[in-house]
Length: 355
View 1 (cartoon, helix red, strand yellow):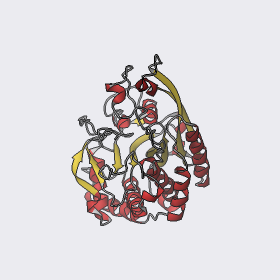
View 2 (spheres, one colour):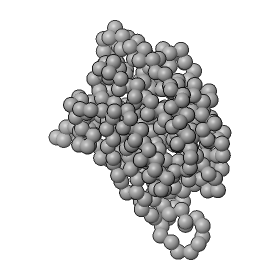
View 3 (cartoon, one colour):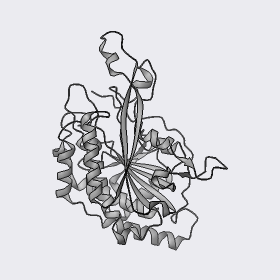
View 4 (cartoon, helix red, strand yellow):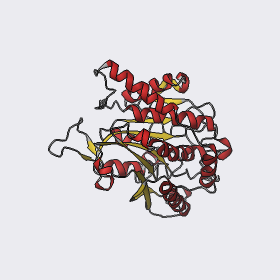
């Protein structure tokens, strides 16, 4: 069984970076209240197209597609076509990562301690992105865990969040919804989130090379951010996206992961920005789903963490309580609860609009 410590970590104690948004503490109370009401209405208006979700999950779960595999290349090509149907532009971000060699655990004689694997992050961007004053990134990961001896399909762990993100992008870019926001919305599909070795921390604890063996794509993306004000670089300096993504200010990153389990219950993540967790709770209460966010706190390592370490406000919408089929047999399309995707989509859409 895969070690359940895969994502759990000691809280890093990252300092809170306050968002320069209309809902920030200290602003006009009536304006803040109006903004929450409006964002809640936008969130509540999201309706999952279950037929499309089933079709997308069927493509997703045809075969496993771990980082660096031939099937992962096919998934990326399929995603490009799907994003094109939304009227959005696809921006590729190829990268090469140094990964620990899994063959070392087989005892088959002298082998290299590390390997090079190629991956690609995909971004779905709206027209005239460079003219936007800021951007919010809605993100997911697209690789499936390579589980020894198992044909692991990852319907929940990468599939649920990816098919939901496609529908959220379509909804949030409807003219009526888009014109209400000051920030553009970018979809990010990160490659290489899963560990190559069996467990999340094996690369640092057990591999001879002592490398971080996870979040390859998101770490690459976060490293490419640049301070918007190049004259000063402090913890509170706003970060800007690459020129390929318009060079605009990155206001926040909202990560979706494992949101398809029946009885969705999002973890209260201590490694997420506290102000975004609070805003998420407000959205849950406002749509009549107050118990969708866990009462107990836990620190989670995921694709949002590299961005927090660069000073970007970020939050992880992840259900890390329902783990019976996590990296196990049974994580196929039949395990996905469409009602959970609907609620996660409403919360994410409301959160984006509130920023």
